[in-house]
Amino acid sequence: MAYVIRVWDAPTRIFHWVLAGCVVALLITAQVGGAAMEWHFWLGYTVLVLLMFRFFWGLVGGHWSRFTSFLFSPGQVLRYVRGKSEMEHWVGHNPAGALSVFALLGFLTLQVISGLFSDDEISATGPLTRFVSSTWVSNATYYHKEIGKLILIALVALHVSAIVFYFFKKHENLVRAMITGNKHLALPAEESADKLADRTKAAAILLVCAAMIWGVVRWIG
Image 1: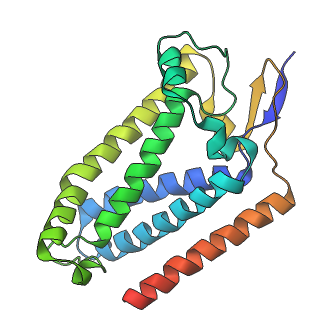
Image 2 (image 1 turned 180 degrees about the vertical axis):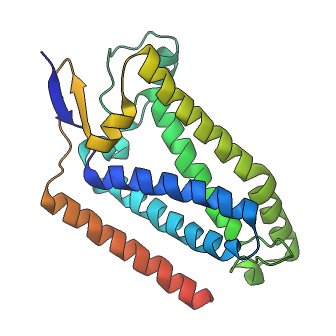
């Protein structure tokens, strides 16, 4: 018997796809340069809003979107990697997937922050460069353009490779689950709350995050 379980609530799914689109657009605008850098900065602010939202949603969102649902001990991660996990199926993120999520969120945050302090000395200058020394700006720029970007590309490539692996080797369609929100499980599991009230709460959190970032941008501008 298969159980259809709502694992990913709508706010988490929307966050995921909008963030993915923004990351792709950021890479493209960075390569194009010139006038596209204005879009690059606004996309960066958008990602900052999304990351702030995800932090709060990780505390009060649907069950499987909360950070507590995919915080694993080193021992659990090691057993999972060795194929000796005590659970046959992880409803939300498995230990390896959890590491990937935290890595992506962490390095995306670092990439956005470093961008605020970067200066390409051509046409794009981060809004916070005037508050720090030239050495700080130089280091932030180097990380943003030469290191952080490559780390994120590698993490995204690893993420996509894992999705392909699960589809062909384990016959699990992770993309469909992130579109519909549902997973077909062999055993019953707790569902994530995804009612109108939950979505309204998410919209309110997003608006507050957007207002905060907008206020900061206007203040430093």
